[in-house]
Amino acid sequence: LGVTGVRVERLREITFGDALAEGCDSLSNPGSTVEGKRDFRVLWDSLNAARGFGWDANPWCWCVDFRRVQP
Image 1 (cartoon, rainbow, N blue to C red):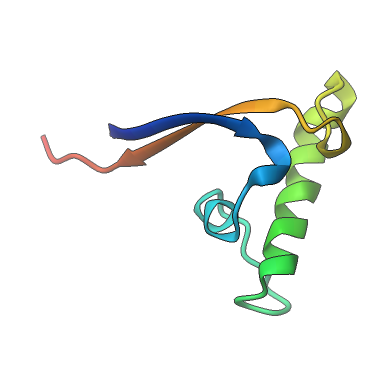
Image 2: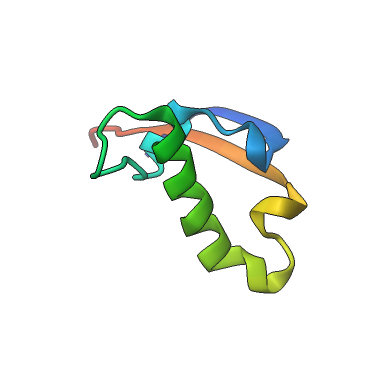
């Protein structure tokens, strides 16, 4: 993988496109920006809320963009 971008942002600033890149597209209503972000919120909280970094805490996050590189 090649790094194409790095930025820091608050968790809740995630865009629908970023949520899609994280694999959170809604099966019940494809293309819905609200549901894609909701799915990301549920996933995030399942992984991070117990450690104090849930959606409501709105922590700062490193956002790293990648592209596939051929050897």
